[in-house]
Amino acid sequence: QVQLVESGGGLVQAGGSLRLSCAASGRTFSNYIMGWFRQAPGKEREFVAAISWSGASTYYADSVKGRFTISRDNAKNRLYLQMNNLTPEDTAVYYCNRASGISPVGDSWGQGTQVTVGS
Picture 1 (cartoon, rainbow, N blue to C red):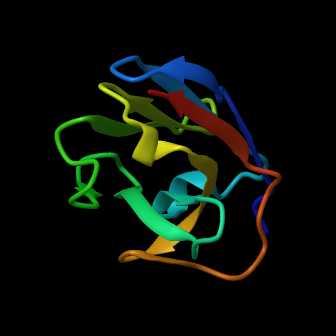
Picture 2: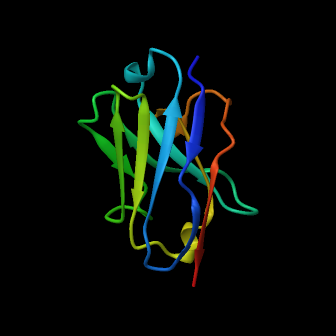
Protein backbone atom coordinates (compact mmCIF):
# COMPACT_ATOMS: atom_id res chain seq x y z
CA GLN A 1 0.00 0.00 0.00
CA VAL A 2 1.25 3.48 -0.88
CA GLN A 3 1.32 6.11 1.84
CA LEU A 4 1.10 9.72 0.73
CA VAL A 5 2.17 13.05 2.24
CA GLU A 6 1.19 16.30 0.56
CA SER A 7 3.01 19.61 0.96
CA GLY A 8 3.54 22.98 -0.68
CA GLY A 9 0.26 24.69 0.00
CA GLY A 10 -0.09 28.21 1.34
CA LEU A 11 -1.69 31.61 0.97
CA VAL A 12 -1.28 33.36 -2.36
CA GLN A 13 -2.94 36.27 -4.11
CA ALA A 14 -5.06 35.79 -7.21
CA GLY A 15 -2.86 35.38 -10.25
CA GLY A 16 -0.09 33.81 -8.22
CA SER A 17 1.48 30.36 -8.38
CA LEU A 18 2.17 27.43 -6.10
CA ARG A 19 3.81 24.05 -6.57
CA LEU A 20 2.42 21.15 -4.61
CA SER A 21 4.38 17.99 -3.86
CA CYS A 22 3.27 14.52 -2.87
CA ALA A 23 5.78 12.16 -1.33
CA ALA A 24 4.86 8.50 -1.73
CA SER A 25 6.24 5.59 0.22
CA GLY A 26 6.57 2.09 -1.16
CA ARG A 27 8.36 0.61 -4.12
CA THR A 28 5.30 0.35 -6.36
CA PHE A 29 4.61 4.09 -6.83
CA SER A 30 5.77 3.95 -10.44
CA ASN A 31 3.18 1.26 -11.21
CA TYR A 32 0.21 3.52 -10.54
CA ILE A 33 -1.76 6.18 -12.28
CA MET A 34 -1.72 9.10 -9.84
CA GLY A 35 -3.97 12.07 -9.41
CA TRP A 36 -4.63 15.26 -7.53
CA PHE A 37 -7.99 15.94 -5.95
CA ARG A 38 -9.30 18.88 -3.96
CA GLN A 39 -12.05 19.67 -1.50
CA ALA A 40 -13.33 23.17 -0.93
CA PRO A 41 -15.28 24.07 2.22
CA GLY A 42 -18.81 22.71 2.06
CA LYS A 43 -18.20 20.88 -1.21
CA GLU A 44 -17.52 17.34 -2.33
CA ARG A 45 -13.99 16.27 -3.12
CA GLU A 46 -13.34 16.71 -6.83
CA PHE A 47 -10.86 15.56 -9.45
CA VAL A 48 -8.15 18.00 -10.52
CA ALA A 49 -5.58 16.14 -12.64
CA ALA A 50 -4.17 12.68 -13.34
CA ILE A 51 -0.97 11.31 -14.82
CA SER A 52 -0.09 7.90 -16.23
CA TRP A 53 2.52 5.68 -14.61
CA SER A 54 5.18 6.81 -17.10
CA GLY A 55 4.16 10.46 -17.10
CA ALA A 56 3.49 10.38 -20.82
CA SER A 57 -0.24 11.00 -20.49
CA THR A 58 -2.03 13.62 -18.44
CA TYR A 59 -5.64 14.63 -17.96
CA TYR A 60 -7.17 17.70 -16.35
CA ALA A 61 -10.47 18.95 -15.09
CA ASP A 62 -11.83 21.68 -17.32
CA SER A 63 -11.62 24.19 -14.48
CA VAL A 64 -7.81 23.93 -14.28
CA LYS A 65 -6.86 23.07 -17.85
CA GLY A 66 -4.20 25.45 -19.16
CA ARG A 67 -3.31 26.68 -15.66
CA PHE A 68 -2.21 23.55 -13.77
CA THR A 69 0.44 21.01 -14.76
CA ILE A 70 0.78 17.57 -13.18
CA SER A 71 4.11 15.75 -13.28
CA ARG A 72 5.92 12.96 -11.50
CA ASP A 73 9.43 11.75 -10.71
CA ASN A 74 9.31 8.00 -10.24
CA ALA A 75 12.94 7.84 -9.17
CA LYS A 76 12.08 10.06 -6.20
CA ASN A 77 8.57 8.68 -5.61
CA ARG A 78 7.19 12.18 -6.03
CA LEU A 79 4.10 13.65 -7.64
CA TYR A 80 3.80 17.37 -8.36
CA LEU A 81 1.16 19.92 -9.25
CA GLN A 82 2.29 23.26 -10.65
CA MET A 83 -0.55 25.75 -10.26
CA ASN A 84 -0.43 29.05 -12.13
CA ASN A 85 -2.84 31.95 -12.45
CA LEU A 86 -4.65 30.90 -9.30
CA THR A 87 -8.13 32.22 -8.55
CA PRO A 88 -10.14 32.28 -5.31
CA GLU A 89 -12.16 29.35 -6.71
CA ASP A 90 -9.01 27.22 -6.41
CA THR A 91 -9.09 27.56 -2.63
CA ALA A 92 -9.31 24.05 -1.19
CA VAL A 93 -7.43 21.29 0.55
CA TYR A 94 -5.47 19.39 -2.09
CA TYR A 95 -4.83 15.66 -1.90
CA CYS A 96 -2.89 13.16 -3.98
CA ASN A 97 -3.98 9.59 -4.48
CA ARG A 98 -3.97 6.74 -6.89
CA ALA A 99 -6.44 7.37 -9.67
CA SER A 100 -8.63 5.44 -12.06
CA GLY A 101 -9.85 7.90 -14.65
CA ILE A 102 -11.15 10.84 -12.65
CA SER A 103 -11.89 8.76 -9.57
CA PRO A 104 -9.62 8.03 -6.63
CA VAL A 105 -8.66 4.45 -5.89
CA GLY A 106 -9.56 3.37 -2.38
CA ASP A 107 -10.59 5.59 0.49
CA SER A 108 -7.25 6.11 2.22
CA TRP A 109 -6.19 9.75 2.16
CA GLY A 110 -3.28 11.78 3.48
CA GLN A 111 -3.70 14.97 5.49
CA GLY A 112 -3.77 17.13 2.37
CA THR A 113 -2.28 20.58 1.92
CA GLN A 114 -4.30 23.79 2.20
CA VAL A 115 -4.28 26.25 -0.69
CA THR A 116 -5.87 29.63 -0.06
CA VAL A 117 -6.13 32.20 -2.83
CA GLY A 118 -6.95 35.76 -1.87
CA SER A 119 -8.83 38.08 -4.17
